[in-house]
Image (cartoon, rainbow, N blue to C red; front, top):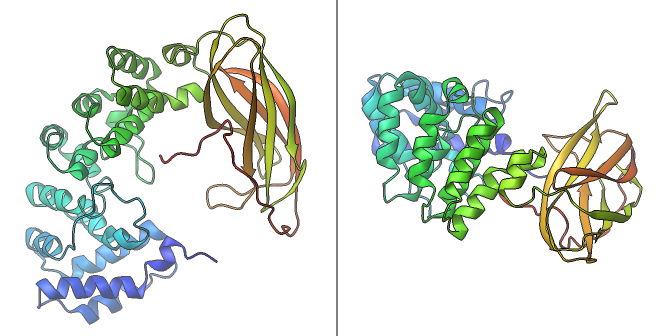
Length: 393
C-alpha cells in the first residue's frame, strides 16, 4: 500500500527538522522538541500535523517571534529548482510546520514574517501562510505582492498569484476577494505574460477561481487579454475558462470560438465492459460524426454521472479535446473511467451514465453498472487520445 503524506510526516521527519534547527541554534533542545511534537500526533491528518508541530516549535524556539523566525529561516535547506514542487514527493513537506508557524503565530510581526514567507516559498510554498496577511494587512500586503510580481525568483512571482487565490485548495477562502476579486486581478495583470509556465498556470487557476463567483468579470478579463494575445496567453485563457466551459457557459464558449451549436451525431457510444467492479476501470468509446456543410470548431467534454452514497447521481465533467471537424468527418473518441477508491471520491454501486458535451450541448452517451466485488487482475487499457486530457492543475 502506498505511503500517505500524513504517515510519512512522523518521527523521522520531525527528527530531521530538529537536527536542522539545532545546527543553526545550539540552544535548541532537539530531543525535548521531538518528544513534544510526537505527543498526540498519530490521530491527526496532514495539515493538522503541521499545526501541531508548529505549536511545539513555538514552545521550544526563542519566545521573541522575530528571533524564532530568524532561526527557522536560517535552518532552511537549499532552494527548489525552477520547476516548483513537481516530482519532489514528500521532501518539501518537511517545511509544512514552518508555514503553519508563520500563519498561526507570526501575523502581528509583519516584516519578519513576510521575509520568512519569501524564504519559505523558495523551498516549499507560502501560499497558505501568506493568506492571513492579506486579511490582516490587505493594503500593505497587496503592495508587497505587486513588488514581488517583478522579482527574479519564479517561486516568489508564483506566490503572488497562488497565495491570493480566492478559493485556494486546502485553505480557507479569502472572503474579501470572493466578494471583490479586483485587487487580485490587478496582480494577475502583472503576471499574465510571465516567462514561466509555472507562474502562468497559477494565474489561470486564480482567474478560474474568480469565474466561479464573478463569471462576467472573468469573461471580460479574458476577452481583453485575448486581444493581440500570444500563444502562451491564449493557453492561459483557455485554462482559466475551463470551469465555465465545463458548465456550458455560452459567453465562455463563444470567446473560445465554440459558440455555434454543433451539427454532429454520436454513433456507437458504449462502455467496455458495461459491468465494472469497484476498484477497476472501464473505457468509454464513441464516434463523433460531422453533419455540417462547413468546418466546425468543437469543444468536446465528458460528463460522468457518478452514483453517490445516497443513491443519487452527481455529474462530474472531465475537460476534453478541442476539435476542428471537417464536413462529414468522423473522429473516434475514448476515455478511461477509473472506479478506484480515492480519498476525494469513493465509488458506489449502481447504474452510471456518461454523456458527451459538445460546445455545451449534451448528447446522450452510454450507461454502465458498477458492482461490489474483488477487482480482477487489471487489463491494460491503451489511453489513446480520448476526449479528456489529464494535465496538471
